[in-house]
Amino acid sequence: MASLRDIKNRITSTKKTSQITKAMEMVSSSKWNRGVMNAKAFVPYMEKMQEVTASIAMGSKDVNHPMLQSRPVKKTGYLVITSDRGLAGAFNSNVIRQVYQTIQERHKSNDEFAIIAIGRVGRDFFAKQGMNVVLEIIGVADQPSFSEIHDITSSTVGMFEDGTFDELYVYYNHYVSAISQEVTEKKLLPLTDIEVPTKMTSYEFEPNAEEILEVLLPQYAESLIFGSLLDSKASEHAARMNAMKNATDNANELIKSLSLSYNRARQAAITQEITEIVGGAAALE
Amino acid sequence: MKTMKVNVVTPDGPVYESDVEMVSTKAQTGELGILPGHIPMVAPLEIGAVRMKHDGKTELVAVSGGFLEVRPDTVTILAQTAETSDEIDVERAIRAKERAEQRLRERQQENVDFRRAELALQRAINRISISQGKL
Image (cartoon, rainbow over all chains, first blue to last red; front, side, top):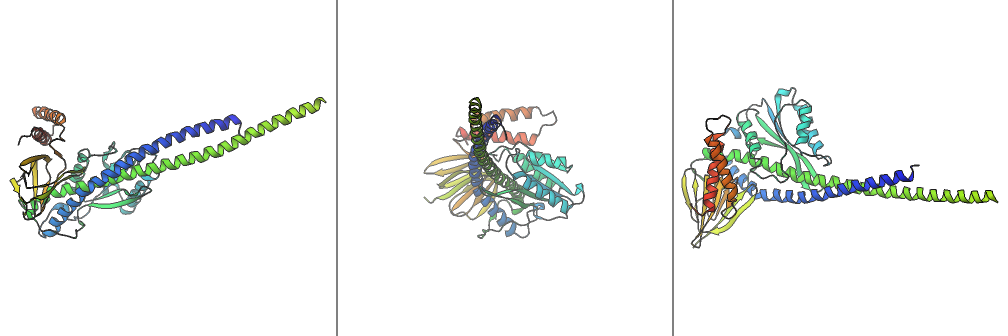
């Protein structure tokens, strides 16, 4: 049986750990709130963008733009969104596992795909596996603004345009609710399956549809990436909040059971002492 | 007078929402004025100001590129960044202007992305003049 002091030490250290996890839980919870708000603020922009893009791309049949056309796939791009920091439960490993398995299934050699890694965890994993990481971005803010990540999105879209890859998939944790996040695969480019809105408007174009698509499509693709990033950030904070909540709960459980064995050990020590005294006194008589 | 709804939305959230009598702005093909009842239209915008007229007053919003979507009773502006005139951080714009000018002066040196510096300069000048109520 562990000595009294050992148990006491463990109780103190578990208490300290639980204080830390409790603090981290609260930090994540406030970040999560803001993350969800950011994702919500983005919705009107995305909806409008989608509506206009769909109306133009579907409305006029004769438009041709490289970003709308599927071309023979020689190389596939994977945009993997993970977090920079750990301690978020299975948040990162879920995404990474799915991407890794997909790549193993679909591709035989390293030349057939390229990875764009957002987030340190994903970057480290794929670099360690010796996979072809063409672009990596770490240190994205917890509340990213569009201008901050504009470089990422435009160079990603640029890589599709200059033929670094012929299709682009994005993998991220889709935010379902505070307790549930889903790994999602989305095909970003080419833009073959734009959701058609229920109400289509036929527009006049100033100057013409082609030139508008020229400007609109890259922006549309960029906003899709930004949307996924916001979604993933909200999930990250929710996942971390949950992980830390579980850690705190476990710590409290542990403290409870340790206190119990501490009290037992203390009682046993007292009982033993009394037995010894009584025994000693009896020996003197 | 008849009015229409104007929304300015950016990826970071809505910036401006109001009922106005007229919207005028600079599209890539030239100046554009829109009154209520306009036919549906889409046009890409330049870096510049969007002027919203209502009750004889004009409100300004700085936009850096983006789109104008017109419907008979609503106008939506989709911009990557946009600020109303009192939201503009003038000091930041002045700093950005100086930085961009500095880059352009070092024209001879390589590794300077001119196109980007020029655009940054345009955006900074646009923000400064809008915050001073010009244009």
